[in-house]
Amino acid sequence: MAGYGSDISVVMRTNNILICNKPGEMAYTTETLAELKDDHTLLSIKRIGICGTDLHAYGGTQPYFNYPRVLGHELAAEVLLSSDPDKFNPGDSVTIMPYVNCGHCLACRCGKTNCCAEMQVIGVHRDGGMAQYLQVPTRLLIKADGLSLDELALVEPLAIGAHGIRRAGVSSGEFVLVIGAGPIGLGTMEFAGIAGAKVIALDINASRLEFCKEKLSVAHTIHALQENVTERLLEITEGNMPTVVVDATGNQKAINGAFAYMAHGSRFVLIGLQKEDISFSHPEFHKREATLMSSRNATTEDFDHVIRAMQNKWIDPSNYISHTVPFDQAADQFDLWLDPEQKVIKAMITL
Image (cartoon, rainbow, N blue to C red; front, top):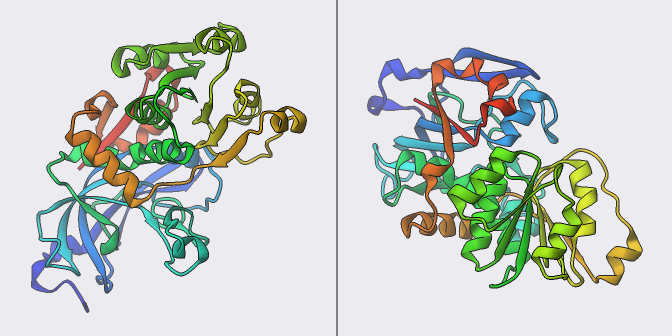
């Protein structure tokens, strides 16, 4: 496709974007829309979910990151012009798998497109969706299938937790400890519950733990600063400790400390990401014949699982959206979203 042609108004050739120039600095600017690439679709962005990745990038603590960068990868959008008009029509609502994989590395050839050796995540490695318009590879689009715009914008973050639980191979009746009750951790708890697990939430934020009990019906919660974590885990699991431990904090101290919470024969899944080394006692880890694994991004299978869970009302996405702001007011909100006193679960930008 050489250009937009008569389908796209001249007015739409200017794109308003919100860019993170450096840690702590968000600014609005405009750009001229590039011609539509082959095998791409031009989207009008309607919802942008704020992820921990966005906040870490703003705070200067996000690995694999360079500035300046247009953030935003939790997206709901409307199709304007597609390279595949047989599948996507103007006006279709879609969400985006933001993981641009190469298709030819070993991981991709094995179906592990989520951990492609040349991974380019939209909004992290390349500019994302904090903009009026965005063009993306058409193969990464997923139709609404009856979901609302708010629901569509939540599919990707929920898929992260769904993938972690699938990685762990969670079975019905297992005790699953999820450390960190942020949006990714909350989604992880939900999908552990869907798998039939007995979920334990661990955090240092009392309001988040209350949210787990009231909104997600998590039976067991532990406040890490107010309770003896090991004693409570032994009590809850009747002396056995959890067979699955999931870190969703990306906090080095929390990750290193969590090795002590593993049952014999257990699995420890790292969804959270931080920059430093992790350390643990080899003898303690070895005698448990424990398994340590990372969980990166998600696959089409995970996205389908999330959409099915929403359609079947196993998950209520409305629980997650605690703050909403129009696009033209979003730049000033990042400091507030980082403030624990604001009790942010999921902030959503609307266009």
